[in-house]
Image (cartoon, rainbow, N blue to C red; front, side):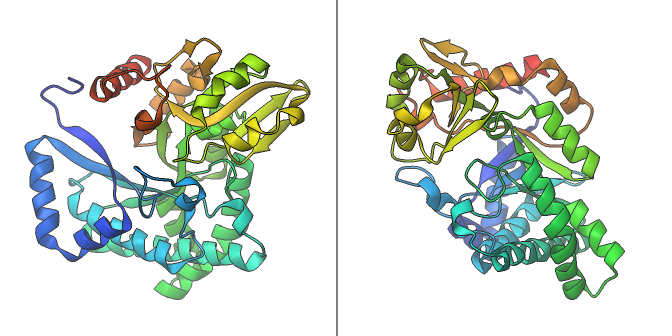
Length: 358
């Protein structure tokens, strides 16, 4: 058991359909709350990244749709916030993780960027009103991810400074009829970053430096998702070992680092496998394929879990965020070569790994 005799914090995933049904039905929310209480669990976070289907069929780049240019994404987030507010225990803040703006290839002009900032600003205004009405504080975390509009720490900071703290603030002022200072406080309280350590590692960024960069800019770390990416040396045996991971459900972005420190990018693993001739000078390959935190290596395959250093966990213990979550979701598509077996036991092993490092 992971938490014998204790209440256990629960991270949920709610689709748009589930969020709409729960938001419209106090009875369904009460029934769910009874189930949580019986199991001594309390929801504190919701993954509102995937809008629709996420398992059991091809997802790929459709996971980012609708993106933050669209009212469907905004309204879905409103409903998730309403549901989470009704479930949060008193004194516990809630987090919602979401799409990092959009899939990068979909953003063609500045109007699309402004639309994203306006809709995110509208959510900040909504969360501020929800806090006033219910006493529950909820924050939205944009989750930077490779091949998305926000993929690096620098890009994310720039979006906050150049868009959210201007266009987003103006939208809050319009909705709430408030002063600039009040709108800025609202957006800093209710909009932040969902810091996924797999995604940070994929960009060959240092997670400690990334967290400190957000802190220096006053950007809230809404939630830290502890996860690890697949890693191999760039040689024929390494590429051969990656072939079983080229499955058809999720988008597996690939990044490679050259001996000169340059980072090369492919949107999906099959694209990288088909571009062997374009790999000259690449020393290491990292793949957006979440592997269990306790996984170390199997033949040529390794993991980025080593980037989660003692210094990184020291940052977590310093109070950089109130929410830490384990984020391995690929058990259903892990090749048998590295599948850890029983999923329940594997999840328990991940919690033990995290507790040991914390």
